[in-house]
Structures are given as C-alpha cells and as structure tokens.
Length: 371
Image 1 (cartoon, rainbow, N blue to C red):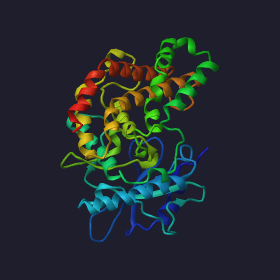
Image 2 (cartoon, rainbow, N blue to C red; image 1 turned 135 degrees about the horizontal axis):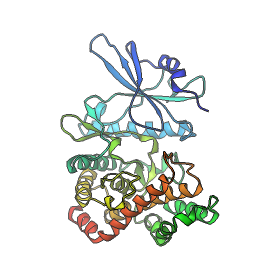
Image 3 (cartoon, helix red, strand yellow; image 1 turned 90 degrees about the vertical axis):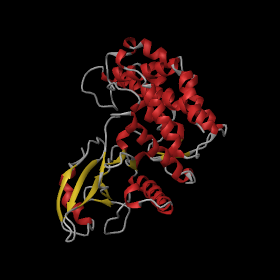
C-alpha cells in the first residue's frame, strides 16, 4: 500500500528551490487521483507566493517519465505560442518547475514522483456549469487549446493510458464482461446490455474516419471537464487548461464530446430518476459556438461535421465503462453503494438516447456556428 504523501513531504520540499522560505503546505483541491498540495512561501518583496506541488499517482500512471515528457513538451510549446501571440505566458499555460537536480520531476526516498507548478493567481475553478456563459467560457478555452496546438506533432506524445478513448476496445472489453458474467449480474441489466449492443456499429464511426484519413490525429486533453479550466476571476473567461496527465494523441471531436457529456446536463452522474437526466440543448449550443470560436478555424470540415458524434460516442463509451465495471465487480470506479455503477451507466445511456432524439437539432446547431 502506498504511504501517505505527508510522510515524505518535508524531503520533497527540500528538493525544490522556491526562491523564498516555505511557510506552509496544505492539501488542496478536489482531485481524487494525485496528491496535491498548495505550498505557501514568504518572499521579502511581496506578501506571499504560492505553488502547486503534486505527487503523481503511481496506480494511475506507471511511467511518470513519459507522463512528464508529454506535459513539458506541450506546456513549453503552449508557452511559446502564447508569448508570440502577445498573451500572458505565466497565467495562460502551466509551467513545470524542475527540482534542484534538474530532472523533470523529483523521486522521493520511497519512490514517489513529484512535480511543481507556479500557482496561477486570480483564478477560480468551477465544478459545474452555473450558467451558459460559464460553460461557453470553458468551450472557448478548450477550443483555443486545439488552436494553439494545431501544429504540434501528436505522434511524438506517449500514450499515458493505452486505449483510453478507443471505443472499439471498450466495446470488446464490455462484450467479454457480458459473456463471462462472473458475478451473475447480467440478468439485472439486460436492457442496458442490449442498448449498447444495438449501437455496436456506432463505436467505429470516429475511429473509421481517422483510419480513412478524414479526421486527423491531434494533441488532445482527454478529460475536458469544466473543472479542468482555470477561470479568470475578473473577466470570467477561461484562462488556463490544467490537469494535463491525459494529454495524448487523440481526436478533437472526443475532447468536444467529453465536455458535452459532462457539462450539458444538470443531473448527478448516478441519478436514479432518469426523468431528471436530459441533454440541455441551450448548453450544447453555447458550448459549440464557443468551442468553434476558440478553435479559430483549426478544425477540418469533417471534424466539425462529426462534433455531434463526439458527444454521442464519449457518452456511450462512458456508459459502457460503467456497465463493464458493474459486471466485473466494481473494480475500477469507486462506489459508495451497491448498484451505483449500474445507475451511472443508465444516466449515460439516457443522455445518449436524448442526443439521438435531438440529432437533427444538434447537427443544425453545429452547422449554424461552423463558419
């Protein structure tokens, strides 16, 4: 079992040069993967300077060297692009601060891998879309992320989580779990199993488009939730994309789709009353317009046309993952009650059905904003 991060925290703080005395380090944020601390220092000339110190999850990321190679490559590139465009590099892109030994990250005496970023002051992080304007601001930020990285060679990035958004692979794992049915749970979710199997062909739509050369492989974030954008406290605009652990080669339509899956509805992820689970068309439209604005012409016509498919496929894939985990015994997603992963799967499927029911409207919205 991994030791608590606090046990090596003093050692790690000594490994970095903060430029001023450290006066405190406290747990920070609502993330559940990495161990995150806010480090407070006391420079002589200003009241306080803060940093974000993280121990990367050894369970989630087996190769911190590859993970940090991706992050440093992308953040350095973003920094150059932002500076050339007259932006504020210090606030609009993360910057990896190396430890005293000059390595990309610090390995503590227990084998834990730690990284350091400056704290981006004057920002706020939201857990849900409190208004269409806020959701749109995140869309512009993720669209701009695509625009800034349009020429970055995606094939040079490591795949930090293999097959992460490989919908065909997710389907194969789902079908294997159904066939094995080791816990006898398939009888409780026959309708949900049939829902996914009826959409088997859908799982190849995006990947086939990529294999056929109709849509390109790009640098993608792969976890485009609202809470992975730092919002400027004064303007309310998306300022800086964070949580770059899943930056990998991928499809831009998947980044768009994951945002819609997460943000364009108002229900809890495990809502049992499915009448409360609905796609919010207003939020879809607001995000689509802002995402395309931020992308600034960097997406191809085929990518834009497939944006509704990105939303559907990311939601279907997530539903498959929840249902697969339910069938194998809740091994991946943590649960707080029996049947929670099945309820999570059902909410995703309800969203998929809602998208299908409004498909013509989703395509019309994309066409309205594509120019």
